[in-house]
Length: 233
Image 1 (cartoon, one colour):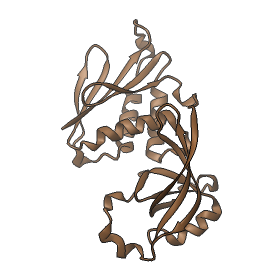
Image 2 (tube, one colour; image 1 turned 180 degrees about the vertical axis):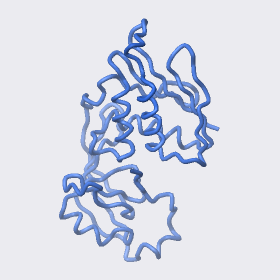
Image 3 (spheres, one colour; image 1 turned 90 degrees about the vertical axis):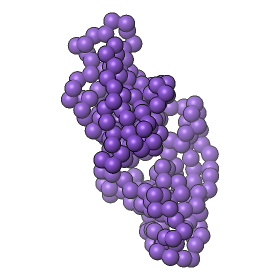
Image 4 (cartoon, one colour; image 1 turned 135 degrees about the vertical axis):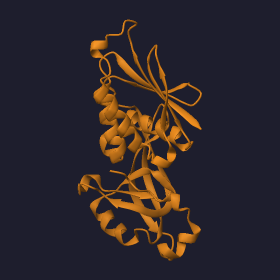
């Protein structure tokens, strides 16, 4: 069993409970976090601890991947803009932003109880220092388009890099549609990366080449189906 913790704390020693975490805000945050980390009933995520000297909630799960997903989702809401987040993580970001009042912050603790992410009040308004680099990715297109049909938000996910949303142009969308789940492509991508953590904040497709002449069904036996990316709305 793995653990992870959410700890709300105040910047001041004297906690003002008139400006603390509301029950409905906490409920919304936990529900959206459950979706953001792709948890399900089989993962058996349960409340395992409530610490009485601070706002700390402990969770236990049979799925050891959820701890890492929780850390990743919280790093994402710190470093990425709204358009760069999946719908589930964006909903979680809005819930966190709503619940953290002035002079408060949220910490994410790993299974050893060590703080690994700190989210302060007003985090969504702060910019992150970054730099750019180019890299080539190879994989099947497992998702293409945009739920809101916004041409500025068109993107793809690749099977072997399923955590990176790669933005594409309308012309690229038209070209790539015929290769969706059929052919492997080699994509040259411009990455925007955090200067402090070196994590990928966003990605933009520069060019691509078709690698495989075999179609998607013929390659299924060569793939791990867990590599396929499905967004949860």
